[in-house]
Image (cartoon, rainbow, N blue to C red; front, side, top):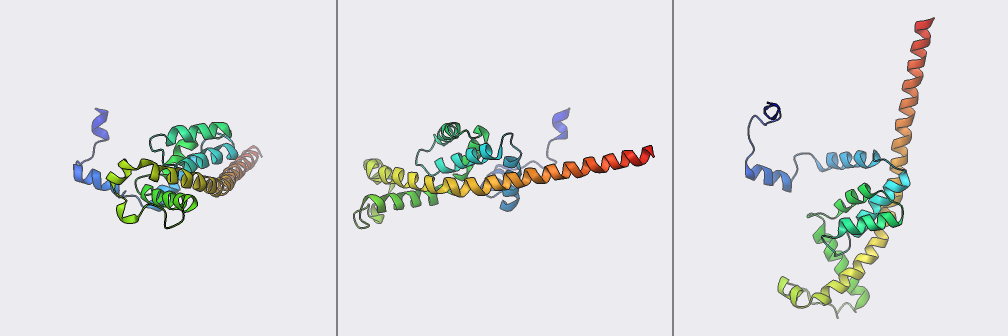
Length: 191
């Protein structure tokens, strides 16, 4: 049967699968290269792809976990971005980056809202404190997330748009060279 063709010769254990999830066997640069090519090959204009991806990346800095896909899609729709690219852009927020994003959004938001000494004391920041005083933490995170989203959008959009345009120009030039060689070969065969 076909399922036998695609089975591993040595089955993986649950611990191996968990370890591979936490630390992929491919290098992070190879994973990044894969996603870069995947994004560049999406259908649409360089603007729509870059705008969609930047939308997803920007909303990843908001504290609304569980709604990032929806928020990214709405923002991408409003600025005529690619919806698939916005979903890929939300991968900027992931289990490895969320702790840093949350700390940055909270710190920025509390520094804007309060004096540095008026914020939540660091030693009281626990899960029970978060539940009892959700507004004291969520409001600074919303403000900090909004500010960081506004900063992140152009930082992602412009380089990505340029990268997609260069990638497509390179592919077009390769196709042109290949077609020219085929025409030359056909002309030589006729002569």
